[in-house]
Structures are given as structure tokens and as C-alpha cells.
View 1 (spheres, rainbow, N blue to C red):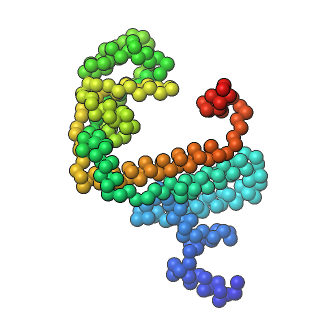
View 2 (tube, helix red, strand yellow):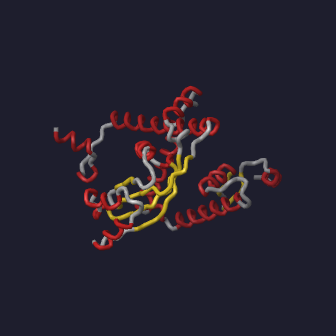
View 3 (tube, helix red, strand yellow):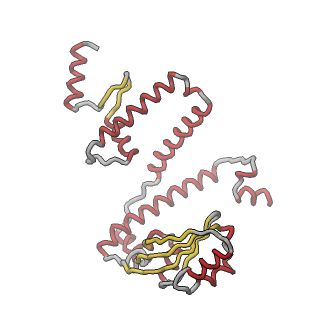
Amino acid sequence: MSLSGALARDTKVISGETQVVANIAGREVTINELRTEMQRLGLSPVEPGAERRAFESLRDRILLVRDAEANRIDRRPEALWRIEAAKEQALVDVYLNIISQPPEPSQAEVRDYILQNPTLFARAKNYTFQVLELPTAEFNADMMTPLFDEKANFAVFRENLEQAGITYMLSESVRQAASFPEPVRIQLDAYDVHDNIVIQGDVRTSVMKITKIIPNGLSTAESLPLARALLKQSDSQKRIKSRLEQLRKDTPIAVYHSSVKSEEHVTGESK
């Protein structure tokens, strides 16, 4: 590049007319890379120093990559596998973003959704729970339910757990009904203070006793944007699920190790 060409380029950089914001040993950093890095770091464009922090993150990553490549780390099997996995995940993320874009729901669809889901809108509530968590292996529903059912607190339940030498954790949680799956949300709508829900996992079980209920119903004006967003989110998830189901159906898949076989593979073999 001639001197005049270099000066012209420098002038463009200073004036902001170029997409290149920096050059690190021949590696150009563009404004799009900078914005992507800001998103990755969760930085707002209006946050003071956001661009500087994003650039410093990019700069250090570029320097470390160059040093790793110089030491041939990129040739190691574990590095090759992780690079390929990262490439695949990046492609999946972009593809899912493309195929999951739903059309804008109509006003009629939005209003129907509001009417069909009163526990999200007109009858929305906030719940305060006392939460007792214990190992699932120690939880016996038949024996333990009478110890906390219809009781004002976990006093009797805790006493029995301590006598049996069962460890537990006690905490308080405030949650909106909307944070629960639909079956639980509908169940909660019929419950009152001192009622319980039990969420049993493979490792831990949580017994959640309602200690306070605060009505938090939304007006029509408040419900409309929320309903529209939830409808689009639901449609997006359905699109992804539908595409995956079709791909699984159309693609030959052979599973050789029993530990990774799904129920459908096991069922198919037993026929």
C-alpha cells in the first residue's frame, strides 16, 4: 500500500467511515465483531466503556489464539474436537434463530389466548412459599404427606425429619404463577394458603407450602403485549420441535451403545 493509500485509510478510521476499529498484528477487528462481543458479554451499547470492554475481550482472545496457534495447540485432538463442536453449535444457534421466527399473531389470536389463560392475565397471582428441600431418595410421599398437609407450617415435618436424621434445607421463595408450567399454574389457582405443591426430581424434592397469595391480575392493556410475546415464543418452540421431529423421522440413526438409547429405540427393539 502506498503512503497516500495508508494515510487515506487512517483518515477513514479516524472519521469512522470504515468498519475496521482496530488492527492487531494484521488481524482486523470490525465494528460488527465488536457489537457481537458486546452481546456475548451482555453489555448495553449505552453503557459507559462498553465498547472498550468488548474490544479488550476481543483483543485478549485474539492474542491468546495467536499464541496457541504458534505453539501448535490447535493441532491437538482435544482442541480439534472442541473447535468443531463450537462451530457446530454456532451454526445450530443461527439456524434455530432463522427457522423459529413465527409470524405475527392476529389480534383475534391474542385476545383468544388471553381468555384461554386467565391464570396468566386476569387471575394472575404472586405466591410466597416456604420451601423445604430434601433428598428424593429420602422422600416417602405416603408417610410424609400427612406431616405437612393442611398444616400451617413445616414444624411437625421438620421434627420428624430431624428425628430420622434426614438432612433438609429451608428457605422462602416469592414467585409469580407465570413462572410455573401450565399444569402447576392451574393447580395453584385452586389452592389457598397452607396448601402445598411437591416438585420431585431425580436428586432433590421440594415441598412448597403457600404462606401468602397476592392477586396480581393484569388489565387488558397490560395483557395484550405479554400475550403477543408468549404466543410468539410458544409458536417458535413448536416450529423448532416440529423441524427436529421431521429430521429424526427422515434421517437413518443407528444407536450401538445401550446407555444412550432412548425409549423409542428400546421399544422398537422389543417388538
